[in-house]
Image (cartoon, rainbow over all chains, first blue to last red; front, side, top):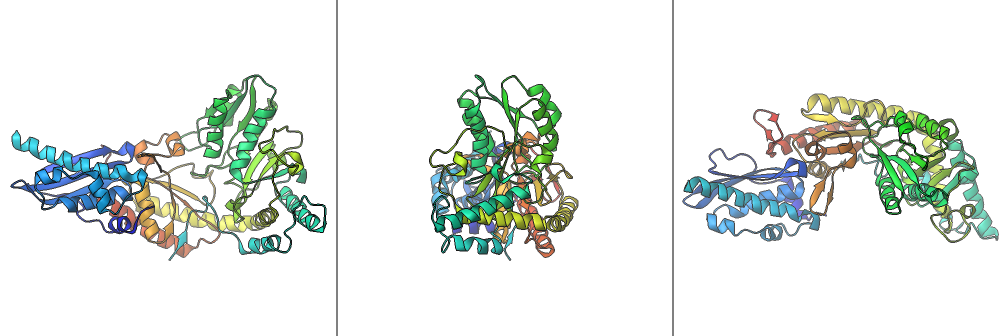
Length: 123
Length: 393
């Protein structure tokens, strides 16, 4: 059901945990649906210099969180906003059909974090 | 190391069973319905198998009907009772924690205007048979209550439920698929009208099951065709599977006490260790009234499938309570019916031990499990790893 790359990332996910000096946090999902994804970003001069995640969810959700945080580190905020769930799926080498929503969570968690950042900085 | 702890899903075929089956695939390949010597040879083997199985549950050979497995037996018991009933309105009583083979058959019958009542279990997964008396209507034709639950292993008070149904002249069926291997089942003593079983749950082959139907119980046909199984279940007799099923049940009954004691001990040590050494873990189902090989635990703040996958990567095969369905994760209907919150129900894992399980294996499983739970909580947004405190939001 999962390809080797997804399994490998699930086994050794990158960027786990809190980011103490995060200036943007996005949380998506809820426990009663079986998944919650939380993304922490450190943004300097509109560039994402660090990203970490915490995820309650299946192997696909954890792999998607890991790869998505890797994909946005070094990107500008606007570049990160263009990240789509399909990009996450492609980077993972594909996900089973019933797990595509995990990649959507990753996209939405990043967007939620950036929204949080923009709100803090405009307000 | 490869460790199989999913014996409630299926069991490995016992090599002695395979040995008994092999000649009936090759030399003794005859059709048991044929009149010639090939047929008679197969027919004799099927008759012997039927006698063995009947004896194991204290039934008559003529009360044993071979089917393709537990699902067909369940379908047949329910639909057969409906098809043969002359009632204008038909009512069936069952429980919320049945296997999908019963629940989805009931859903199908509801479309055909059969009324179904689903009994609620207690928060420990027990059905109270005393509630039956309030549920019967003049149209009740059948009650179906599983002998042992497939997820949480709870053993139901079948004898009492059967007695209450008998007093109301309501047929009583039990899905004993999970119970056959470890429970002594005497259909006469228990007063059961129909019982489903499946060979691959007791180290027999897949694709073969039995529906026991007590003499005098009327049942409509599910499968039409030839005159096999006394004209009630058509289809060429699968001689090798039948021979294998009988051999497997014979061995299961012979070794039952010995296996139960050994497995129960390993199971109890494991449960005690997990509950005392891993925080925020909950045992689902009644601790005592339970299959000896069943462990069903909810690990708060982490999701079941990720636990399953991590254990699998360490060579350990278990089963998760959640089944992923079309984009959303659906928690187990059994766990939810116990009143467990949805967020915790998503964190459920079933470990089902078997005859090959060893103490060494269980030690390894415990160690891997402890580390897995620790690792996954470290990345859970619901758990403060440094403080060791978790909460749902």
